[in-house]
Image (cartoon, rainbow, N blue to C red; front, side, top):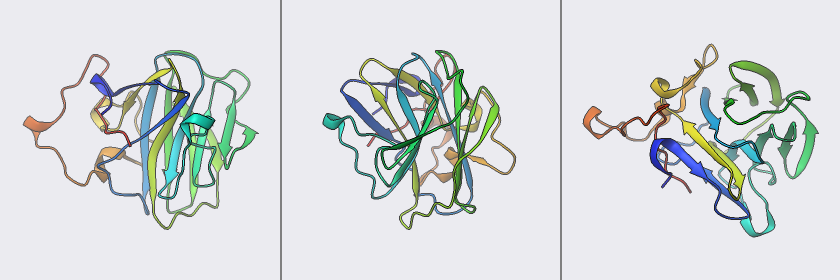
Length: 190
């Protein structure tokens, strides 16, 4: 389980977490955010059902053929262990909010930093198993994940739904996780 307020902290070489309790995304346009609580190496994005990370080898989201990630620390987009420049020369820093967008209908993934769209990072994607929101982070790095619309710092792009809409079971109001300062929903980690 992820910590209070949706906080995720790296506790090993390159750990990976994914939003569970959501249906694998095969159609539609989806959005979640992660606020950077540190400014080191984090690769965030989406993973297919056949994703295989390897913490010991430092392989996380974007290092496998079934995952796609943005690493703003190094201004790179990653898939299948291959990098390409993405996101501009300034990179990201502590306090920035990274938006992760999946357009499953168009087979595209894009990202935003502090509400500013960075353009399409990956296209012509298909995953018969569907996609899950996922991220990997180095030891001592941390982020706060938001999947509920009420906890997002920026509105989802037009036509996108907050990831909460894909929950397999919607929490009743009294069962909903309490929002922490800066409000983010708690997500389960795989």
